[in-house]
Amino acid sequence: MQIDTLILGAGAAGMMCAIQTGERTLVIDHAKAAGEKIRISGGGRCNFTNLDIQPENYLGQNPHFHKSALSRYTQWDFIELVGQHGIAWHEKTLGQLFCDNSAKDIIAMLMDEMAKAGASLWLQTSLADLSHADGMFTAVLESGGKRKTVQARNLVVATGGKSIPKMGATGLAYDIARQFGQTVTETRPALVPFTFPEGRFKALAGVAQPCRMYAQGPSFDEALLFTHRGLSGPAALQCSSYWTEGQPIHINLLPSAALAQHLKTVRTQIGKRNLTTELTNFMPQRLVDFLKGEMDLSGNLGDLSDARIDALEQAFTAWELFPGGTEGYRTAEVTLGGVSTDGLSSKTMAAKDLPNLYFIGEAVDVTGWLGGYNFQWAWSSGWAAGQEI
Ligand code: FDA
Picture 1: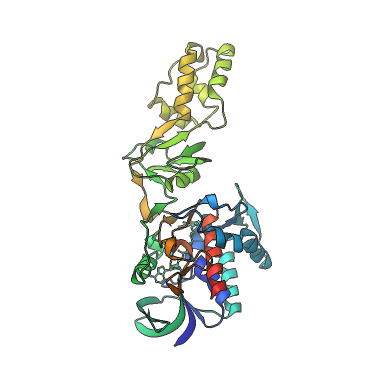
Picture 2: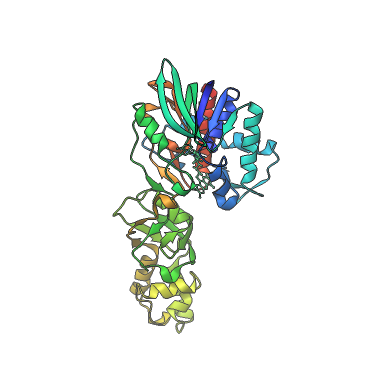
């Protein structure tokens, strides 16, 4: 069978690309259904983009690579598409847009657009062999024990990263990149909870606290969630993308409170009040109880010297922790690193030395922050490749 374009992976990027390339396009995926990560994203409501997309919201070896695609197919373009399909949405926080109803609405929209464009989709189909000669890619596809050979002028690799292998994530994109001489940068799990040696935060499991947090990168003012295994919640996930093994994370548990000033004022009014009682105005009781085991929180406010109050503020605002690791690809929302952008055109996503080979979406060394940035990269890079084809 001869076609124009073979797209590997019916995820966010692959489907968006197929909508552009239309007829004589075949999308294959080894999963039972298309867009499985879209379905589970955003707690089932898909945080499909962000109102404020900036180049700084992305990590990768080349901090400029993603600018072109993101500026040509923007969040406003995707919002318009969502609007055309009558999908209601809302801004949850920090510019993050979610479906009012269900992430399945986004999948249905993409499937509908793909069908309108005339692209074909083969599910439960995997790639058994791939070669390139005389300007054509030859792919041997396998489905239900049967093999079929497909020849295509263009090959688009949209098989994502390694995160959540249980959902069908594989390293196929990296294997294909290497097969055709592309470099793959070191990959690691990102947007992933931190783990700590057994039991460290067990007593706090389920407790949340707004905080300011940073690792070896920018700081994030978001919620921190303590878990049986360690630290999660948006603040921890964001920091995990910038964290390197053996390095500390820094937590300010009171980013919007002037604790020292407050304690000094209350000390003159109600000196008999317990320090721990006063602290529950700033954080949950369970967190205060836990911190009693980490630092000296004994005594009444009247007993506290200025120096001790200042030291307390320092302890609460500059808590330094050394994670043992992360939960890994098992729960990571994305994969940091991937197909090196050095060998790709930022305008078209094509390999510079094999222009009919394209890499899009999470497979590429472009990783967004939590908050709809990763889907926007999938839409924008898929669109950019589709325009060129
Ligand atoms: P994606 O992984 O979506 O698609 C790849 C496709 O290729 C899959 O359908 C897979 O089955 C297929 N495939 C893989 N290997 C194959 C092989 N060997 N053969 C055939 N097919 C193969 N982002 C965001 O912006 N907002 C959000 O709300 C969330 N929420 C979220 C929650 C959770 C739990 C996760 C794990 C991730 C998110 N993300 C997110 C990240 C987001 O899901 C991710 O960035 C995009 O899905 C990437 O889109 P791609 O199309 O590149 O890969």
